[in-house]
Image (cartoon, rainbow, N blue to C red; front, side, top):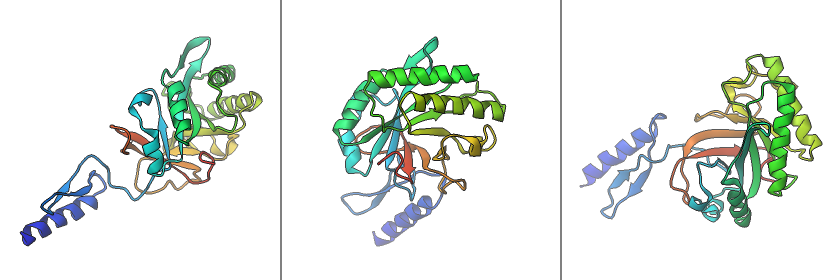
Length: 244
């Protein structure tokens, strides 16, 4: 039996060292470790989770999240603009209520379809309109999500559109702005150093932190927490911008 246990333990250690596999060692009643492939092995612990309508408020126990070290959430609020296929998340209102009741700080993001400076301003106004309807706190981070394939590939144009969005959000009374994008977009799809925001929410699903200046790092899209039965986007807020 000892030999069998040693072999199994060795297998667990080997698998945990392979970055491409998702493993977690658990113990059974007979003391033999079992391998749970539901959780990706990682050295990182998130303090922020971002959610959309896919994660229904009724399915989330935000209090359990807080008990596990989550300090804030970023909730998808809107897409597009009011005059062209406007969208707002049907889950956002209840997500805000339950997260706030659990003692989590609430922040928000807008998924962009903009193709001009004027569109960018209109999208900011739509984001603001829904935020005001839901009494979003003025100290919430209001992030612009740039990942849509329809966005311009001209870096200067996209930079100008993003800044028009940020300027309008500030004008509308929401001064805490940020940019969400994949690491591959920073410095290629837009000019990072010219953005109004200097925090930078960077998506990079890997075991090593991005080598660029990063305010918040989305390190996984398949993280699991007690309090939700499913995969989650996990983030680390390094600066306190989202959690303070």
